[in-house]
Length: 187
Image 1 (tube, helix red, strand yellow):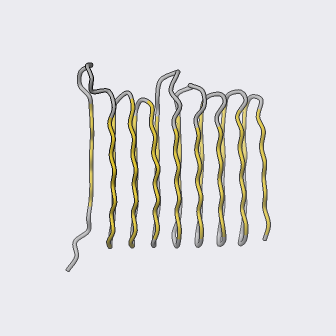
Image 2 (cartoon, rainbow, N blue to C red):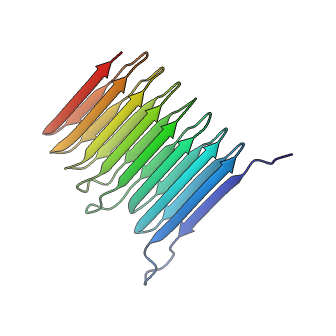
């Protein structure tokens, strides 16, 4: 009998000093997968790879955050929330392949230059991006099946690229401030 693997990591800096960054590398192969990661620090970095059946990943970082997550397999899901300070730029790179899909990315801090990229391939898809700050870029790609997407960016000089190729499609975009948007949909 295989038991579900649950990983919960919380890294918190309680005092100043030289410890002002947190880093985590994670790989899960298996059946029920679940990873919840909280990093509360001035900078956090996460590399995650999950292959298997009922994956789920949730990451919360306070301060400047960087996450790269690849999830392949079955029921999928991802949830990323990164805050930061006024001068911080958060980066989220998410790739999901196969089955249930879903991704939520929210990056806050009104700092400049957030970047978010979500690529989903196959099955139920759903994605949402929300970024605050100026000079941010967002890219969303959905290949096949039920699709849906949403994007909200506020601040000046933001850019967004959304592409949905195949299946049921839908899209919603809302940008405040000077912005550029490119949308591609084809069935």
